[in-house]
Length: 132
Ligand SMILES: [Zn+2]
Ligand SMILES: [Zn+2]
Image (cartoon, rainbow, N blue to C red; front, side):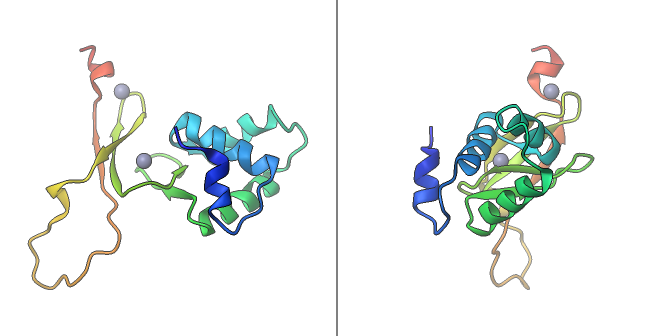
């Protein structure tokens, strides 16, 4: 498990209780949409506004501590920034799973000089939903 406060210590961001709570919720869920996150954080800080949550989320994104992913047919989700990886999305339960990117991103196209970002989304049905 990553140490949440170490993530903030290594950045220029101030460590605040709200930020620690936001990060621990994101870590717990793996990938979470803003409305779910807001609901969770309100159980800890009942008076926090959505604008404050957005402000913190933006700061954490700018500091490269969290990243946003955009699966099709779903709201954008936030995750803790980690090594580049792909996402498998189950079309039945909507779960998002991380997987390691291996040779999947060596496109055979001469014009490419440098690939800087890899966003890979695969869609299908997970084993849990298949009942295996
Ligand atoms: Zn599933
Ligand atoms: Zn991920």
